[in-house]
Image (cartoon, rainbow, N blue to C red; front, side, top):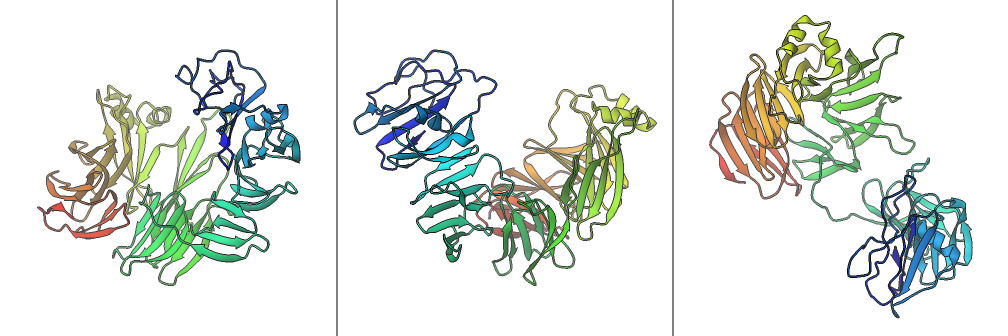
Length: 532
């Protein structure tokens, strides 16, 4: 549904819609309903709104048809507008007003019959071929903005279509784009907005948008001295010199990060357009960014960066009469050298690595077929599993040295009548930390006994000082003694906490909040509480 730019007309279209009657004398236009969708029905944001059985009109009744339907109103006279028959198809497939007398619409079943058409007669002004996607009017000019439903082969997600010849005039890999006569604006890779001349694509000006709250963190790495920080959201990432409060790099989003001894950040850049997924090397002291190795891809192959390690899983060769195999390999992100690999039957367990990349945790539901197959070849494991009465909701945790792949310990989590979902698991020293929804549990690897349970999430530990830090509320951190689970400190912040990390010696706590503020706190002594 759309309004004309001058606000005079309202129009909407629908495929396979039930229709009984339309109201003519109301400012609130809502007069068709849709029942259960047939199997070939596709939702379209331009379709008529659902308002069944309201004060705006009688409940609608009828059956689905394979035809399109549409409606339009002149809001100045509050009268329904008669539409040309061809216009109904264009409104039903998705459309936008270019001005009060023309629309661009996509035919719902034949993209080649899309058109620039007169409104409300439906007379075709210019035939067009439009794939599935969203249409928007430009700032001004003989153009239409097009956002394809699926990323194009060339990688663009938004485009400017020239209505004079029906060809794509400008395209961008970012959503933000608009055109006004001979200038257009588009989002740059840095996140800034660029103003360009339409004829030569010459950059005339650029502007940074005001910062907003820090959202979900997709990847983060911090130098041991707390000077350098790399952090990424879904679409944007940055590297900061915290000592100077300066942003050194502003790049597209990355999915993993590691600060290495050479002073560089090694980050996992996802594929973009024709650029393959790769390790990017960001050197803040030199202010240089270079491309590293490509990350292997292929059918069934998955890779995930945890600190200095890239864990790659891939299906093995299927041999006749044997169970399918899948392998897990650990690689050094700096050299892409394979450090170790393991082969599993049927499927991989869920895995995590701790923030410092020292330990990897594999998690197996006790009811999984893969674990049952493994137990057939491991008598000790078979005995441990047999001792568990309630296997549903119970797990086996296997701790591996992330550098060598050697087993450091195992732990059976028998949940009994109180099962939960393991959101995160990591190990440090003799302790395993399990994070559930707003619950953190600590276990001894030596005895398998539960050492404690506290409310919260976002857990991090200091192996050196034996401390556990938990986000006990959105803007509150609580620090516990990992050995006794006694509360040591409780700190409240003016904004939501996004990240907390201990220093290597465990005496300082680094905290990042959603308003982009960094705190470094002395937590060497117990008893500190209150607001920061």
